[in-house]
Length: 221
Image (cartoon, rainbow, N blue to C red; front, side, top):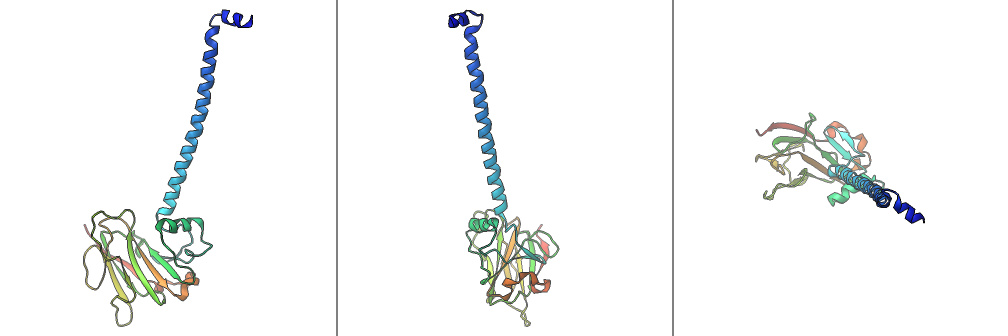
């Protein structure tokens, strides 16, 4: 009798389907919100990881003028972000007993190094058995750009009589030690790698006179 009574009430036959639709809609909305939250969290996580590992090492640097020393980049106790940067670059960092990495993305005046500008890198480096200087652009290399010199070693540069050196970094050909910009425009980064150096374990004791000066000479209009 109960089903017959339910069916006999006005609108009773449509009440059950409507309730089912409401419950299904509520359940679908809950699932949709959960999926949205998961997608948003994954997107933010990937974006933050990309941002944190896209440039240089985020932690552990020791500033010396325009240069930053990274004494723990190759240490087994390096932080997870540093290890992620190494993995993304595909580089094998210098261990504490092997050497020391110095990087610069600004000049002596604190201005960002730009591929359209010319810079003079002069002076001396901390004592080391050997060292290399490389220049790199941040971001995707310019397509179709012909291969060019990307660095110098301590054994191939021209020096002054007192052992000091001067290297020009810029887009136009220069006499002497010239290192071409790696791209036509955009920020650039310089890196000095010191091999078998006694300062690897005491980077905090480096003073300004122990690293090369980095002076902007002019910019191409």
